[in-house]
Length: 428
Image 1: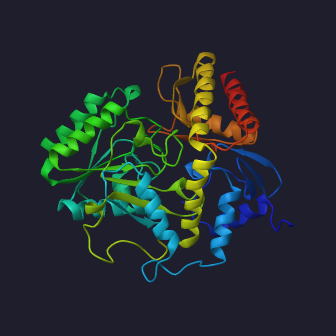
Image 2: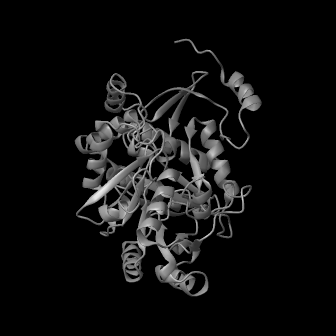
Image 3: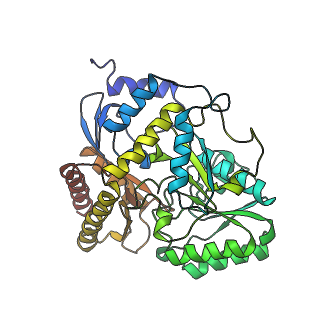
């Protein structure tokens, strides 16, 4: 197929017709992709360490998922599940209910399109189930870009800066983060303080937590903290909502990060790699809680589209049959080893961490402070050498790795070598 446009031509069109708010850090446009590699409209090859921000745990265009979508396309493309449903919707809900770590034994699920939609619906369900309205989230959280999920998100720039005021009855507690001086005990005390200063416990419908923060910096909540949070919720009749939009579907070496703690949520949200590139998200919860609102109260026009459901069913099969959880663990060990070497070699590299293949490290300045400028420079230097790399975090100084778990070992090594060479160049 002959390319119609060059990168330069598409950039000119973008400047004229695409809103500035829908920005991207690159001037390239992808023409095709395969597993952990991309080729842009000018034919240049790229290694992808972003994976669509955690959407492509099984890589670009995994053959099994492509085949499932193509076969579904030959049968039904869309009906709107609120008008007449179809087998893949029900089959996927069944598979999720069997696997998601929420209280049971009876569980139910509902499907929407994005992580933000899943969080919005989880809050709706929690409010209906408890008759309460308050929601507690955490500093550094990212739950979406809709108005309610922006209120729940704990980071102003670039997400919230231009869009206030935010919806009310959303409160924030400190996320346990040793690097930033927040112990598990301090985080729990922060919630207890909220009960005294802002909202009594009997008005709180839900506490929403990412077991591993995504945009907030890949900080990992300890099993002991999550167990204590579960106990606190049970004590006060508060529902615990686990946001696994980014940490789910094998990224951490388990299907869901919450499994590392041994606890179960009341509701769990998932999206991103659920359908490995197709738009789909889900809320899964205890059946009694999920059934709290009336018929027709949940869903949307495109919610649980047949093509996306078919992709998600293929994702679940692939994770099981291709040993993806073990591969995630193995990749996590490799990343941890490499990050440890960098921590020894480069003064600016600090606090490497991972849970499975959900891995990150900090960049700090000579005074030990978060170095946002250095993080931006590292990502730019990597792009010069053909690697797509993302920063994140409360201060924007965290480098995160979301390379597809299916990436061939030579491609993974090539990408890590680019990061290492970029660090060498920046270190002088």
